[in-house]
Length: 109
Image 1 (cartoon, rainbow, N blue to C red):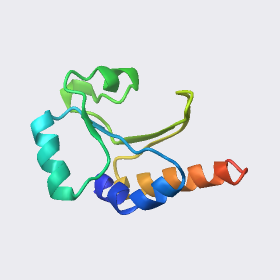
Image 2: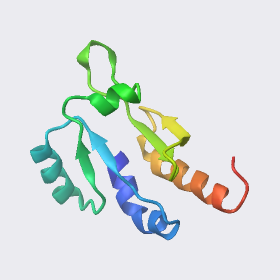
Image 3: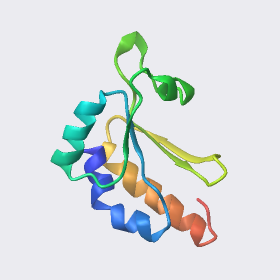
Image 4: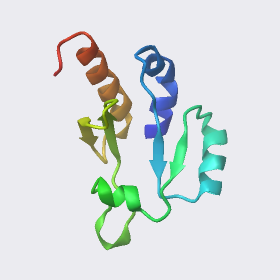
């Protein structure tokens, strides 16, 4: 659901000169199948060992995977916005896109 939203809004993200990257602790083979099935055109990265998940503190307790999180990171590598929501996964891409557009229009929310 979350990825589908990013796929549907990909052209809008590209129009803002934004790069979308998906990250998952799933195996590369599974991500490849998922990418093909969902029509994903942006990179999907396998964080199999969970190193990036640990750095972003998105690992769930008791080995229950990672939380659904979206980050907007600028060209300097600074996190400018973060959104964590397990129940409203369909809002991630819309929220990130709205934030990016507001910054580009000179009115960060």
